[in-house]
Length: 350
Image (cartoon, rainbow, N blue to C red; front, side, top):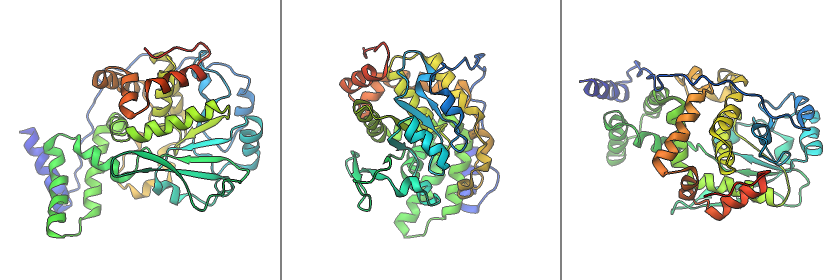
């Protein structure tokens, strides 16, 4: 009976613009009793502490003594950095590559930025076979002296929404899929607001765990592409910073995979992830106006239980983290090479 009731609520929401959303479930019954742990002290800490316009900035080596410092960093979007902070990032930390995991919409909403204006920009493109290639933007000059920016979106709305809806239980996915199918067959204009609000209601119910599972499943080619960008930068001995909007979710997932590739323990990976709980609230993010009804309270958090569950999900679904990376197209040889270049004591992939 519960399924029938949820189905009716879903139908009412799409067809009649019902306003009662689904309640977010308590996915995890027990909270993990883990402290944040002390981040590893690094020579660059004093410089990083002087960054005031780039939140959530840190060296991946602060997660574990087994990661070589000064090679890969993570942060929130740095495009609006002050001139002082840019000097620290580019001149003192020697960062030359920026890996942007944000969507095309977020990119278009950006304010004008000298970082972007002076950069050589590459953008990932997924072809009809699902393969992802990097292409240099036509208006981007390869001879520019600024950063090299790689745009590899891990949450493009059209791909993400379709994948998210298809992994919902049928009685919850059917109202959305039915309306979209009817609109296509009959030539109707889909009620974008109603469908989007329904998807957002489902996203609120699924929470961070549902979002992470969807990203890891739907954007595997992009994840392999992003990891190759990291690998090539490390091979070239050119430091890289990876980021999304606030450096928590998409950045956290890619960081998780990089650290796991280097044999870093789950506890150290999770301890690094939950350090992002101190970033500014999503409520202050102006791009959320597009996502009316989005529960910022749910998605502002960085709970240890969520990332632990994601690591468990990957192992149960794919057999291991290396097997998941292979399913993305990031080969064992590439995983070994990244581990050898990043790890102080390289742990080869078994």
